[in-house]
Length: 201
Image 1: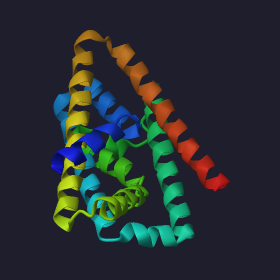
Image 2 (image 1 turned 90 degrees about the vertical axis):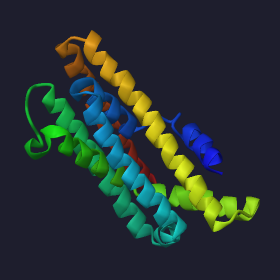
Image 3 (image 1 turned 135 degrees about the vertical axis):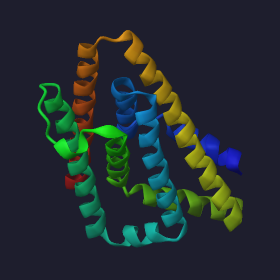
């Protein structure tokens, strides 16, 4: 069941999101170790989200539409702020000075970015409900499936981290700054897209 969860998780990784881009950028600009510290933050939050889904928090969130809207707004604002921070960083301006230094800050950035999409709990709640109904699996199997999904995140983001860290060898500092700018624009784009979803809902 761990292998099933791993394969399912790897399938989900195809949809590259802001976390993946942030890890890639971190590895390219700050190195492999800093990116791995960030990945640790992602994995911890993913574990908590999956456990929350198993314990039925997803059903509670799904019941209260106002709460879902607030969560969407929170996620959108976080993405836009992080994106703008990257964009102004291209011009050597610091939007979030307290978060700019050290691997510890990378950890907290990825934690905040991952937490900014707590509706992931709803997704996993749906997945686990389907597994229980269609495959009649046990609680232990659910934990194994969830573990496999988390391991896929760890594996995929580590590969992204290795790829990004190799870029530092070949790319000039200005190109890396441009990469930061591009990632910033993409994050702002994700944030605006999230806001538009809330308004159309």
